Image 1 (cartoon, rainbow, N blue to C red):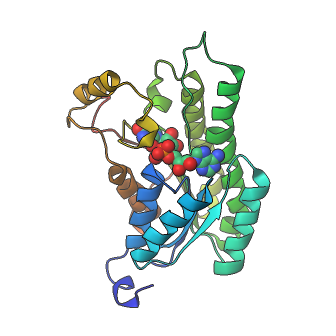
Image 2: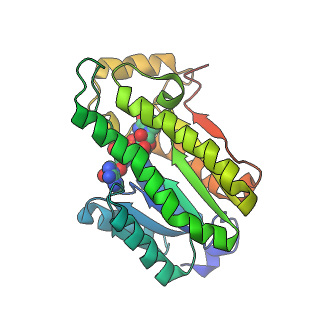
Length: 255
Ligand code: NAD
């Protein structure tokens, strides 16, 4: 790490921060933001080449960064990653539970496979990662867990039975863990993005995206960096009294 820049103005200096789904989209933007804020960044995603490329981008920003191929649905992979992080850095300060997928269909058309897969990644994966880091954070007496919900997890959405259930579920996790872990010095919060221009929107028809933009008072889709900035704030000591919150970052689309 560049010691000349780490002392001043970096809100996450030396905070060991695990980010899941960090190879692209909001996860990658968050890893880069955390890198610029001085964090030691641990990037997890499913494909080696994509993880390596993301790690290289963080290192180019002068950050200490390491990557792991982790499928969050596989508890052994999550546990092995946490063990390696502890062996290398000795602590875990922040977990950003960002990995998530969609497999959309209306209720009448949704297959059991589509339902199970989205539940597995978006809900079970978040549970795996949070549980895997919690003993360490409790022993430290400090830590931050940030969960990716969605406006769909507050209002529901056409064609997203499975996804909406997981994003509502993530809010349930957040509120429950904030009660359980707050007394132990661990803050737990969720971010509920609106529609953010990342590859997850690639499968959406252009007309649907145009309609979404029309509904947003700021008249644009969000950028991955808009969400990364909020994760950085919530991970930092500036958010020391923010716990159990669901922060909607949607350009005001639901106002
Ligand atoms: P994205 O598809 O661009 O990136 C998701 C990343 O997660 C990918 O790199 C993917 O490989 C990884 N991933 C998928 N399954 C995984 C698994 N089993 N284990 C580990 N990594 C896995 O998505 P995004 O738009 O950047 O979204 C990130 C998070 O934000 C998701 O949880 C998503 O639901 C949420 N979100 C996104 C939007 C949006 O409009 N883009 C809105 C609300 C919430």
